[in-house]
Length: 150
Image (tube, rainbow, N blue to C red; front, side, top):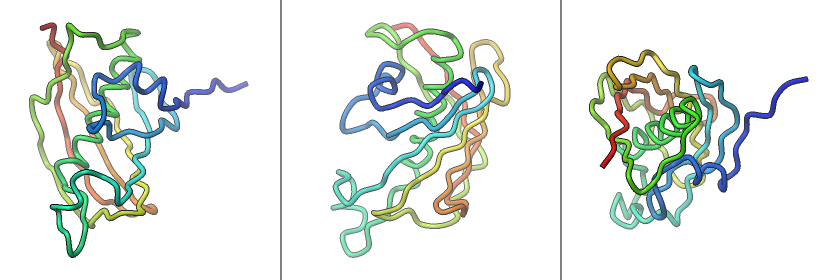
């Protein structure tokens, strides 16, 4: 019998310090503690950035695709640590390397986020993220984040 490792939006919000309009993960399809996560972001024309990026051809900003990968990584990290974010914790970016953007992400796309933990050293988590649409790579990056008490 396999364990269900999917998460709905309620559980995502329990494990993510972000809130509207900056939640960029709609559903977690699966995760393996300490290893990887697969999540989705449904991209709609109602996103607050589309009126300005670009009105004549709406494209999801690449930095927000990387942010979506980082949010999936944060969920995986909190689940792995068996912790939940609170008013005294933040999850900061500390590095983005090898970011590449292969194809535009537009309204109507479903962004599939695949993030794996590469290593954890001195509280800094390094991940490899790949975002795909319809099986084609839209973006990829190595990201580093740290959980801080404030």
